[in-house]
Image (cartoon, rainbow, N blue to C red; front, side, top):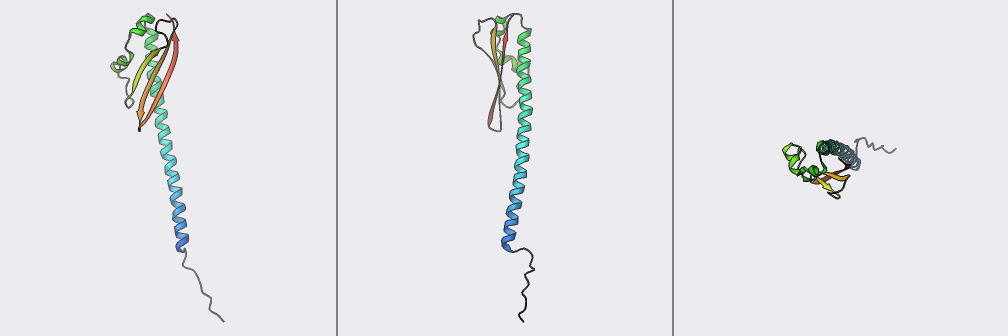
Amino acid sequence: GMAKISNDQGLTMAELVVTIFVLGVTLSSILMFFTNARVAEQYARDSTVAVSHGEYLMEEMRARATLANITATDWTAWTVTKGLNTLPTETINAVYTNSLADPLEITVNVGWVRNARTYLYSLLTRMTK
């Protein structure tokens, strides 16, 4: 009869290409996951720092004797003297809806830049003396 042709070379070229492609997709997915997790973790850490800086500034405002004393203070400069600008290009400022109002409505903005992305936290409060 006819001799049986055996095909025991293992993987064909097409199978090899498909296998390498599947491995590549899998590895890049895993890499992407860890990169995203690292970015999320960094953002969480930055957010905690930003909020604590804003709250620190508000605590100082609460300690002031009068509302006029609060509005007369250059809070951006104050945060620099206190060494609060630890995030990359961090800026902290205070904005008043109406600086003569009582209660005084205050928005403390904390902004920073990380990996070419700009982030901003705004903390809103009302104070009366």
